[in-house]
Image (cartoon, rainbow over the protein chains, first blue to last red):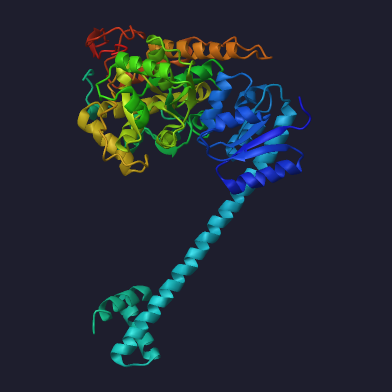
Length: 201
Length: 393
């Protein structure tokens, strides 16, 4: 077995693949390449002959690697095949983190574990980053919605001022009174005012 | 209909043991033949049987298998070959089992529009023999290999393809390169010219034809009429830990299959897939009955040991081929073959079906692929009228 393990990363998420590649290089592995969805994956794996392939558990390309492993004994085999020989815990952790791997025969358990640990850590980090982004996105949307509401209220107020020739303060008070009388939120009142007054000349 | 059971009085007795695990997650790949799980979910059959089921869309059979192995999924419809291979320690270490089949038919072979022109310029109607002859003639005119894809090494499609080619004296590994492509990607990959022929489940054949990317060469039933395909797979460990949950799951799916056992309901069931977003593709332009799916209880859902035998034969043959091809340093060609009855749980099926008053076959095996017409099989209540199951029509 070569001293420096060669790794192929297959991930449709380019950002995550780049993050993982860097982490693997930092640890001294030789990364042969990064692939996303490709029709020719089998040919590329054949040509590159990696010791280990790290692939997104949910990649549709996994059945292609399965076929190579099942039909050619020199091809990397699914890492879950090694679960029985010892490191069930790491492999289970990998599955739960969305990491799958294909490993050539004869690679020692501790070397598989070391590389899986790197992948698991990066996948989890990426997952955390993504949920943070989703969260921020949600907050941004809320601010946008609030801003849109305020614009509508301002617009309704403007229409009242124009139609009733009154001051801003008066228009505002009139809207608040309507909201109280009808027990509706101010934004609803603003919307109905706009729909009615916009039709008027 | 083969059963004396009425769908309205199909429920488990109150004394039936409660589910050990009530909330279950079932994985699926977008295919028409997964319809029993969608129907059981949308028509409330899981709920009736005391289960709270979440459906989880998955992107490969490998992913389904791994998630079932590690308990991220409780169960999933999967090709029978994957379940049987796991018992032989091929592709998996945790043996899986099945207590029911999930229907017959539903597959086809599609060739690219370009190859269709070559094989059939006059647009004749093919049968399995004339299609094979056309392909054989074409193969003599080309240099390089043609590219054929199926959906998984141990899928029914791969076995049907090989059996068809071999039967008509075409070597499946000479001038032919075998590929694996996930079903929802078949059309794109064919369109890009990377594959010339594919064998996959519906709706992907009909959609390829509707989009003029390919043309159906043969339907699956022209290779093996009323062939088995998917089964409900769980791990043996899960089955042993949750026997009542498993039986309740089988009961709900039997009810779904009974409901699907007439044309209108079947088509309505397929439409559910689109309505609820289980399949992204637009199914409005295709003939949903092209695959001739059959869900008859118990004919199409019983875990026939004779069918397990057929799948196992193909798995062993492929494994031998793989072992012979490479001089592996590790000598591991000895298959750990568990008896078929350890994987195909006929007793579990029988115990649930009896509770639901379903007419059962008296035997666990039947003669496969030998009947050109409808035929009779002895049942526990009355004879079962069986569909034809000839190969190579």
